[in-house]
Length: 459
Image 1 (cartoon, rainbow, N blue to C red):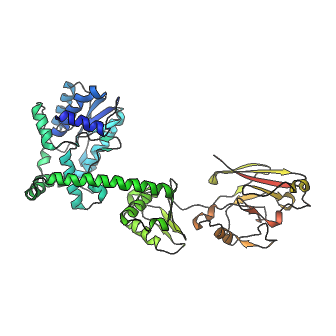
Image 2 (cartoon, rainbow, N blue to C red; image 1 turned 180 degrees about the horizontal axis):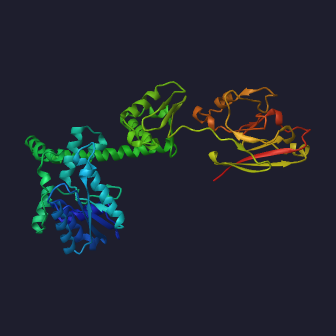
Image 3 (cartoon, one colour; image 1 turned 180 degrees about the vertical axis):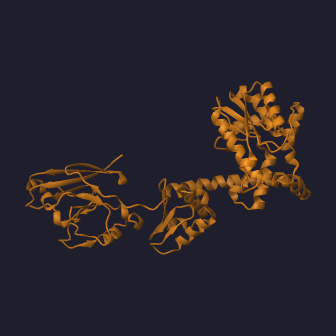
């Protein structure tokens, strides 16, 4: 199978390009990107996609302008639209390596060009040698299984159609098809880590194993397969533990027996999903959660990245931010009041003939019947206050602490500020939605008017 057929099969196997796609091809003028440009140009009719060529000029070398002109002329010969993006890397210099600054700036420029040209994908010319060099570089710097996967074949709207061929095969393709290209002189400088790996380290490793590149590539492939398997397991646990986009609850009896590698992935993913500043999530964040698994009930931690974790009897609750108490809502009587913080609405109405209705009514979790004439208006829905007591229906007037009620009902400590109660104008608790009413306002044979309170979901 020739070079073009291999690239085509690779594109189809990994679904890198779909019919009617517009592909922005990043072309520097070097052999890799020129091979990419020519092979995609030869496939665009067969696979039914369009090409726009983009050259990013970093302006780091005197010859970079001539290289951009070279790419522009080649594009014109192929009948393809051309876009030039010029960068001022010197002005962007800050803490970090020049290599990394240029890489980030290049991808940003390509993304801008993609949006401006209405392209839906960006094709870049990474190949198998780049993959091997990346894996080695990450091992040297320290990495995880995710890092061992190397460069992804596709990442969001970026595709890498040449990740099935080696550098030598690219050079052979250019030679056989008389494809001209330029040589970036900076690729020969060992001031850059990647170049040093390619020019010095890999030749040394080849002395120990002539097929060392294939061995390293095999590690990357196996790391990718392992990562996919772990991601599959991870996603099942995440769905079980997810309460909302900003909240997870992790049962200790489920998470503790898991293998440490899987447990770490699950917890780190939850930390990233719940953190207002996910870039600040570090190994320290994970170790703090591990500590929380062994901590006593009631422990609270503010985690790096901004999320908050609580330990209760059965597990850990992780939230994006501290839960604020409910504001005070004055309830319309009669009428409807929207409780936006709870996505609920409260209906109230007043009806006569209490003696007749008493035989037919019964309080449930969402509808309550109260003696209207025993209530001092206006009435409010709000959060509980410290030390408040309540006289639940059935306790014959005896009071019970709200805190004890919430403990009995297994309301997590961190949610007690969202636990709604309804009080009259004297602050007396007359009803706790989804629980019960006060003994003091129950309907009796002497009731003349009944206040009906009904709670419903509000979308």
